[in-house]
Image 1 (cartoon, rainbow, N blue to C red):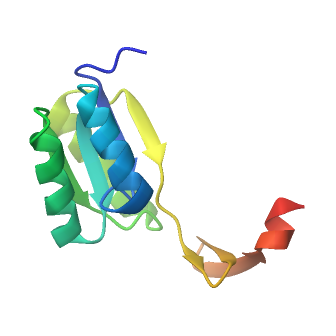
Image 2 (image 1 turned 180 degrees about the vertical axis):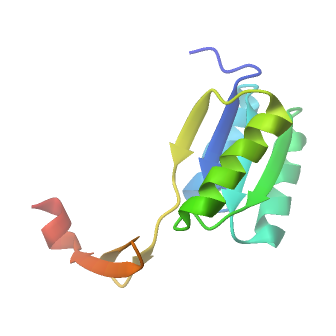
Length: 116
């Protein structure tokens, strides 16, 4: 797959797997929109991607808030002129439980339930 100049959004893009994917895609020439809540770590990840010679920007966004997500996607499209891909990496994992917030209600699912 040719990734040079393709615009990719990565949620949860400031650390761990998100940062690893960002650096990998930067090495392939992708232009990156990194999304997370930790501005300091986002700045470091953007700098690492830019050091690989690509355009990278960060966006502070709580992906559990639909309005923030809509605004972020609109801003990314305006900033880059297009969006070619999305990696939904952001998530919440606490004490072995999968946590999901929908319509203001939080539900939890154990790993065993998730895998069944």
